[in-house]
Length: 166
Image (tube, rainbow, N blue to C red; front, top):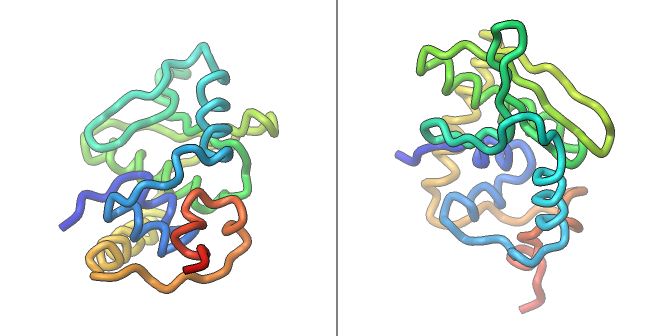
């Protein structure tokens, strides 16, 4: 059984083929301009909060206390992938709950000057659990799902795996 990560959850809600490639440790184009932009935004924003903390198998972008409550922040370059962002952060909150740590989440969109509070709920947990089971099923497949043209393909760092001419 694979150990699911927040990255798996993120890609599950965007592209199942990309999820399969990642779960099989097939690296994206590391020189992709969109990957570089995301790294840059994460590096230069929210300097007062601690950055990238590894807790178990999760890596959170920001962590702070507010009124005695632990707040986990996830920095995103845009709100285009809102469902993916929400469930990635819910996954982190769920992992922390299993460790006995209560926290709330915060999605941070510095370019949009927007933030969204994310709270763990039993309903979200049910959908998260179904998603995790499906992530494991996809990761165990011997070949990736067929490529599907979606609106995100043009800026995807894996686009060569799906759309390169043979």
